[in-house]
Length: 306
Image 1 (cartoon, rainbow, N blue to C red):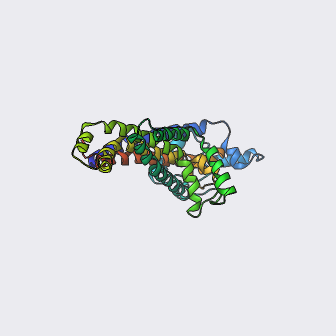
Image 2 (tube, rainbow, N blue to C red):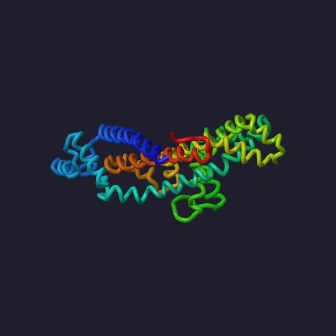
Image 3 (cartoon, helix red, strand yellow):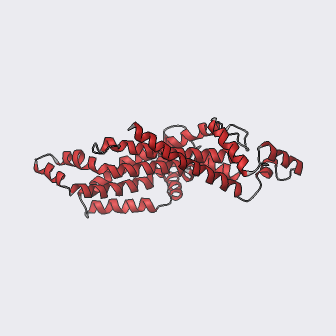
């Protein structure tokens, strides 16, 4: 397993380098001069030039990229051109908030999605299966921002059960987690249903029932465990997507996460923060996929890391 982990890390390095090159090029090829934003719209040409020199914007793109990679190797992502704070400090402040919301959202998706998919597979083409399928389709199709605003209107404004926005207590986390996890819940439910339907028709399930085992034991111990491999894959991909795609939910609920930081930095052409945030998201996604691959061996002992 250690050799497999090491190989996966080596494979992930070119991916991260590719992400760095793409993001570095795109943010600098975007229209507008960041030096003007730094110095002010009505600043003199001399002030604008000093701002360009201060942040290294007067250098060529290869030089800027080499400077960024050199700092990255030393653990230095530079300073924000907007706030002059260390990028690592900003990421350390904002990323745990996004991680908290993404983790809560995936927990909601697991608690609701997996049981719904199992129940739906046990009674295929029945009324309950129809309800689960319809709700899953609705969850995938419903815009996140619309559901978030609707949840605020009903549960915060009218009923007063939860805070409207912000981060603080556990009650602040409920609506953002449900909103963010809505689409993942639907996808996990559909994948669990499809995987369970395939496993329930296997010979070892029929053998377990013929041995007189209770239905609950057959479903949970034999069928569900063997059906979890594709479900674990979807869960890992969904968790990575939640980390990278929480910007809309964070905006709706004024959640101080890395998504809002990234959007604000893109608007301000804050290159160091944009590069650092995207790099952190890419590394997180790669790490989540690595963890998912390692979990396969615990879910299905037949899998070997050769």
